[in-house]
Length: 491
Image 1 (cartoon, rainbow, N blue to C red):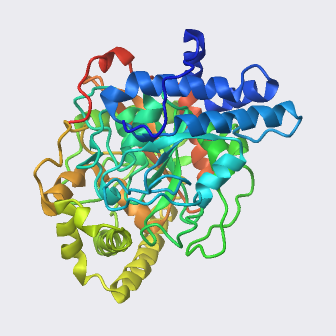
Image 2: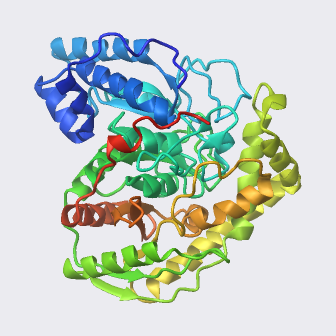
């Protein structure tokens, strides 16, 4: 953990530290009612970071003094009688690829050294809603891999088992939430990077419809692949944050129409009887699905049947997204690498990947985006041919690997090791459909299980309602802090 300020001063009472275990929804109720202050929440979060992050390495920067000042402003505004925002006083963390004023946007590496002057639009909306930014979270360089490991940041560790990966690329974000350091945190998803770490760390992670959340000040995030959103411990918290973040800005390359109702309302509503198709078949070749994930899928299908839904196994012919995904992956990474101040500081593996992607010219990218739209139409037919409202799949194919998955390997071997992690996720980045990682119990190895719900285009409200129904029927567990007590820090 690299501190820009001093996190240890003014530690909260032990009872206050447990505030961070509460949901953001409950914390907002307490701050707006005057039961707790924003300063208490921030102190609780900073105390948890100081206690737990050295063993897990979720944070690259902790903005302790700035967060305290921001919390004081929230409290003073409330005392003046000003309206409280929907995230009033909630401590949040933000993935390294997003601009936070006064911080270097590192993209998980050492290529930049100058702090940015202004918040990105997502961070600005968080602050306008009353949230307090307490720090930035680890990611692999440029978010290329589903393992949060880098030369700059070392190994970020899973709070369920510090010897295992938390996934990626939003791995630091997932660890910060799962380990109780913040109630919610912001990640990004260009090939599963919200859903994969959510699956590894027992969190709820909804990748929204393409264009649902602005990418400003940038026109896009890896062209048609990427989107931004929260990782949370409850469905209600995800809905709350998305209602703050959603909406477009001039210059966004992709946009989405406003939903018919708020996401908070959708998450609180019992879904109608849905027709749900389930399959364990991966969408990428050569990926073998671990039996634990198949069992979780079968048990979830049975639970959904018990909840009154029409659930049927089917054998999909998934469209092959490789030719649409790979050019956008390379183009997105190369575009970010072209903008760093010190390209000579990039990891060797990144420089190799940059050279491998040299064939991806602008015309190739345009072709890949158009190919993705054609795949989206084919994916729509998967819903239409059997009248499915939702598709149910595993989130990841393998159990979380041991940390060090990227040690000593080049981009081709790293890409091979990534395949089981993205085998059920990347297609939906190419097509833009909303998809959510939903906790599904714990495996015999003590690590979380997860299933993925995929909705029709623009149907996040259906996914939120169904996810909340699953959450209520099968409550979600949290990791035991003793699992990482005394574990090694970054490796």
